[in-house]
Structure formats: C-alpha cells, structure tokens
Image (cartoon, rainbow, N blue to C red):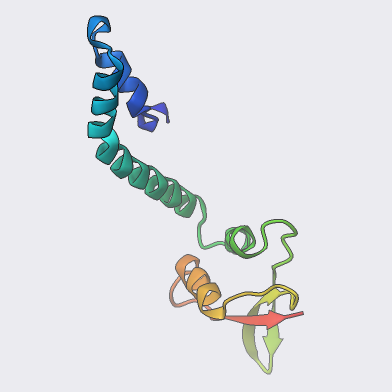
Length: 126
C-alpha cells in the first residue's frame, strides 16, 4: 500500500513555504526529522517481515518456501519427504550436505511455521 511509503526529506521541502526554503533551514529541518526517519525505517522493515510471515502458513509448501528463501535462496534444494517407519509416521526436511546451516536457526524457523501438536519434522542431509 502506498499509505506507508513516506519520503520525509521530500515532505520537509514540500511543507516548507517557497520563500523560506534556504539551504541552512532545510538542513536543520531534515536534521530534526532524522529520528522520525529512523523510527519509520524500523517500522517499515518490521512491517515487511510481518507481511512475509503472514503470507506463509503452516502448509508444507509454504514452510519449504520459507526455508529455501532463508537458507538456499538461489538453488532451492531443500525439500520434504515422509513415510511410515515401523508403524509410525515420520516427516523429514531434507537439506543438502553442501549447505552450511545453523541447526538451531533451522529448527527455530521450522517451529515458527509448523502447527503445534503436529508431527515433529526431522532434519536429514543428502
């Protein structure tokens, strides 16, 4: 949405009357607006992260999309497999062995997107 795209330095120039647009005054007003710009940038990045999180549900395809976006953005080699092993259902996230992944961060991302109470996802390398 365009309501969140605010260019504060341009807004300073726009709201200042033409006869008062001196370089020193514009620089001073931009300095006064700098903390607002900083907070706005924090808000905007947080909003982008929240929108990304809301676009990915707990479905396996979205979980794999999130994992591939974070850990393997170019080749997208992370995939899902499941099956029965001795009368119990197992689900696996398969990660290439050539990919250097922090397992704690990987488990955090998996737990963030998967539904609680569902089958635990085990990590395998191939």
